[in-house]
Each structure stands twice: as structure tokens, then as C-alpha cells.
Amino acid sequence: MNMIFLGAPGAGKGTQAEVVCKELNIPAVSTGNMLREAVKNGTDAGLAAKKFMDAGELVPDEVVIGILKDRIAQDDAKNGFILDGFPRTVAQAEALESMGVKIDKVVEIDVSDEAITARMSGRRVCEGCGNSYHIEYKPTKVEGVCDACGAKVVQRIDDKPETVQARLKTYHEKTAPLKDYYQSRGKLVTVQGQNDIAETSKLVLAAIKG
Ligand code: ADP
Ligand code: ZN
View 1 (cartoon, rainbow, N blue to C red):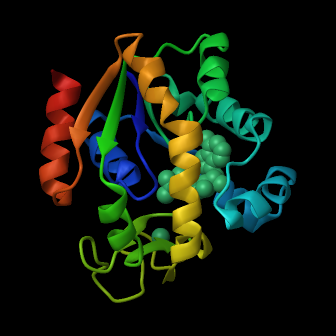
View 2 (view 1 turned 90 degrees about the vertical axis):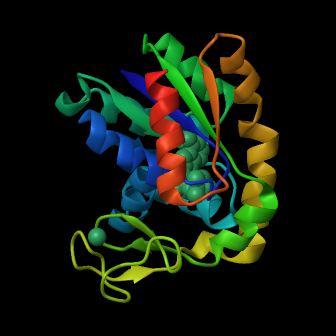
């Protein structure tokens, strides 16, 4: 099963993708995590992406599409995958189609901008493996240390309040049109993501199975 998790920054796409991946035993493919890794490693894609990411803007389609294409060609994606944070533009959705990737379901996680703005200040990410945490809703067992790999857990540069507002604006302008795109193709299911992580997971799993 190939799925897309769609939603504003901080809506919980990544967290829910991790839950569902364990349940279905398919990988979560996060373009945000891959781009952060590329920036850390100083690859060409990373160098091209950094200034856009820091400003809360989208990385150019051709850069992201290239990374995504390589990733889903890998062996572990053969039986399906969850795309977390891709596509983010209609051009990216069209690129998926022209690659011949069949999408079974698009799960939109809907959270108001107000709730997102309130959540973002508590968000943390692991410098080592990219796992995401929240100081209130999904804390690490040991403060500041990743449960999965033991590396340091930090706030992302783009989780600063000004940048969060820029990312929300980018989302509404560039990414939200994908709701209509997939609705008209009969793929879209919308789940309310305002409640806690476990509650949202129940809704997401029900939406996938339904
Ligand atoms: P969030 O969903 O919390 O905004 P991500 O980790 O998915 O964060 O993405 C972080 C940043 O990486 C985005 O603000 C954007 O600059 C870049 N990015 C990630 N995925 C894409 C994509 N599909 N297209 C363009 N830029 C992307
Ligand atoms: Zn880690």
C-alpha cells in the first residue's frame, strides 16, 4: 500500500507515519528528514536546499523529486511506503504520477494554524537519527537524549516562531491545493489531528483500513 500523509507543518504527519509504518511494516519516507541529512552531510542536494529550509520555503521541486525517486527505488519500499511531506506541490504530485507510482490513499491530518503555532515551540528532533519528539506530548525518556539512538535532541532552526508562520503560509499557498487534487481522484481521507497522539493514531488507522 502506497500512502501520502498530508498536513501543515507540525500537524503530526511524521509522528503518525511512524506509528502506521510499524503497524504495516512498510517504511516512512520523509523528505524533510532526508533533506536535513543531506544538509548535515554537505551533499549537492543539501547545499541547494539549506537556504530554503532555513527560511521556511519549499526546496525546488527538481531537488526534492530527485531525492524521492532514489529513495522509493530502494528494496525496502517494494511492498509499499508512506510519503511524509511529499508531494508538497502539484508539480511534485504530477511527478509521482509520471514516475508510475500508484497512490492508494492520501491521509490529511487536519490541525488549525492556532493549534500548530502553540505546539511548535515544544517540538524537538534528534540530530542523529531524525526521530521527532515534543517536550510535552512526546518527551524523550531522558531529557535531551534520543530514545532510539542516544544522540542529542534539539530544536530545529525552522521551528522558530517567525519561520513557523512562513511555513504555514507556504503550506496554504503551495501544498493545500493538493487536497482538491487528490479529492478529485477519490483518494483523500481527512482525519482530525487536534487531539493527542494516541487518539489521532486511532483515527488514522481507521481511515486507512476503512
Ligand atoms: P514540516 O512538515 O514540519 O514542515 P519537514 O521536515 O517535512 O517539516 O520539512 C522541512 C523543510 O524541508 C520544509 O520546510 C521544506 O523547506 C523542505 N521540504 C521537505 N519536503 C519538501 C518537499 N516535498 N518539497 C519541497 N521542500 C520540502
Ligand atoms: Zn536518534
